[in-house]
Length: 215
View 1 (cartoon, one colour):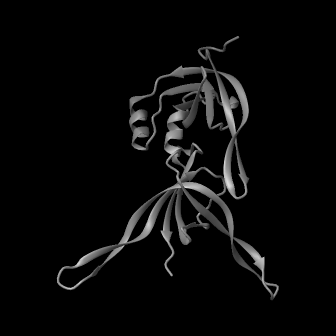
View 2 (view 1 turned 90 degrees about the vertical axis):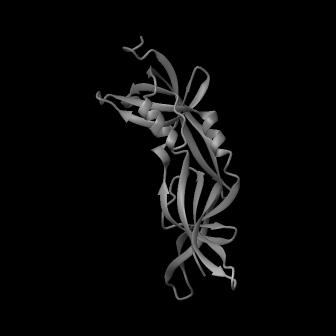
């Protein structure tokens, strides 16, 4: 029996995040069929998401106790990424704002660089004392946008301005456990993580604000 106005059959999809040979992979986990209501995207929601590079198309409403933070769902043979969730006036229901997965993948296809994520692991030295030892955590695909960090001038009569790149914004596939006390290596250089953002908490990508560590 279909409950109330929830007359759409959707499939909630969980994901598994795996690491093999220091490379990250995402594989499909469990699938769960539930009944859902459907509503259109609010104009304010669309424009807010558009400003963040998202294209929400459809919203489904499910029972809150049936949703376990699954990042994807399937409906009528089309897979969607859940880009945002809302608890409405009725706390027993949750709204799932969705975007077609192929549009998300188009953005992920720009992750063409490979960077290294490092963390410090306590290691015992010859004196029996433990101190932080930099250790490679993983290698991940990334999109790197370099930012100017300062400038200098050279030349005599006609000054030539040269820009020093000390800051960058790095987008990577989502990985649980990335923290600001870690650092990246890009082309062999160390970049410290200053800020981490998981856009819309959709667990698809992470945006890292990083700063190059000067010698």
